[in-house]
Image (tube, rainbow, N blue to C red; front, top):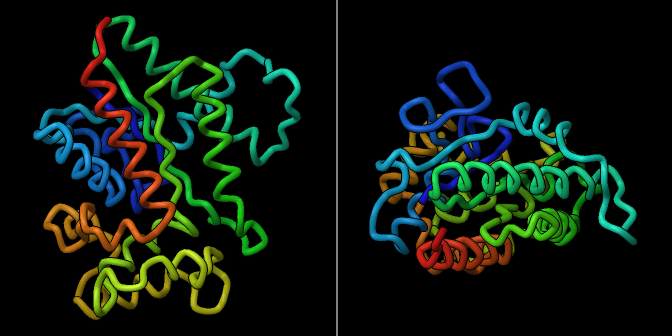
Length: 248
């Protein structure tokens, strides 16, 4: 099986080393969120998708190009504003690509669609549910059963802070409400994470390794206290188990 991952950049899902927006295998440099995906997958599959070159990456720009190729149709009876429409169309495009590739080689593909819940401004707080639903609606519109929204609340820094704070994995649920997803706000999540990393003599570029090494433990029960993480983890496990039963 293969997982198609799409994110925003090197500090979350990752990036391509080939200068392209699409890559896999050694040309994909996994970020901390991709390593989390692989750690969870390994707990279900008993092997690493990354080590098996079974992770494929679609950059934000490549996804935008794929979205432009979609038929100009909307779900009947639903008016979609720009915010919900973006996530709906993005998951549609990823699902369509996954289905086409699977039809070509009979290898089941799942999709992990990463976006922060509150990544642009403080007024967006509360859009977590809307973004997740828009993604799931997009997957459903393509009759695709293997789609996973990965939507940290307010953003991925909260998940990482949960593990790196002192003491780690304590009261993590509060982080979803207390941290600001606005990088221009006082004491934003990004600054707090950078401070915690500095205390360890680490930098943001070390985050993927910290997840690989288990310093950030993707399977720790304390992580599950965060609703956005628990929902992602649960959905990913469900999809992986369903993919194990896939027959072409």
